Image (cartoon, rainbow, N blue to C red; front, side, top):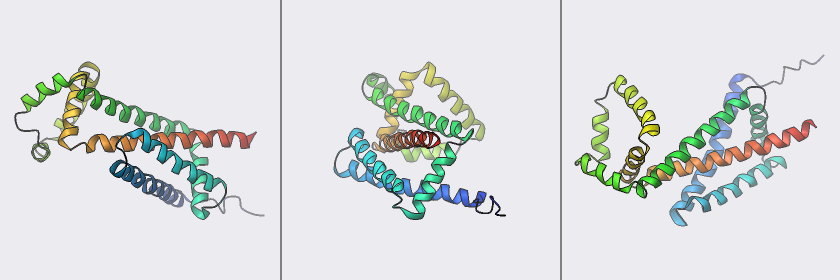
Length: 210
C-alpha cells in the first residue's frame, strides 16, 4: 500500500520553493518597472499596465504547463495560500502593504502640493541638516528606546498631524532625489499585481472544487 505522505514535500523544500517563486517573480517584474520608469515614462499607470501584461503572460504559461518545474512550484504556492487560515494572513499582509504604500505615495504628493507651505516652513527649520549623510550619522547615535519612541510618535502623528507628516515625507523624497517615491511606487504596483494573481487563483481553485 502506498504511503500518501511519501511524495509530500518537506517544510525545507516548501520554504525553498516559496523563496524561488518570490525571487523569480521579483527578478522578472522589478527590472521591467525600472526600465519603463527610466526610459519611457515615470508615471505609475503605464508601468502598471506593462507589469500586468507580464504577470498575465506568466500565469497563462503556468496554466498551459509551459514553465516546467517553476510552473508547478508557482501553482503549489497559490494552492497553499488558499488553504485554511493561511489565506487570511496572506490577504491581510497584501491589504496592509497596499494601505501603507498607497498612503505614503498620497502623502508625498500632498506634501508637494496641498501642504507645500508647511513643507517650506519645515525646510527652514531643518537649517542645513537636510542631508542624507548627516541624518545617517545622527541616527547612529539613537538608542533602541529612541527608535521605539520615534516610531510610536510617527504613527500617532499620521492620525493627529498628517499635514506635517506629508510635508516631511515630501522633503525626504527630495533628499533622496525622488527614489523614495519611485521605490514605493514599484512596490505598490507589484503588490497590486500579487493581489490580482491571488484573486485569479482564488476564483480558479473555487471553480475546480465545483
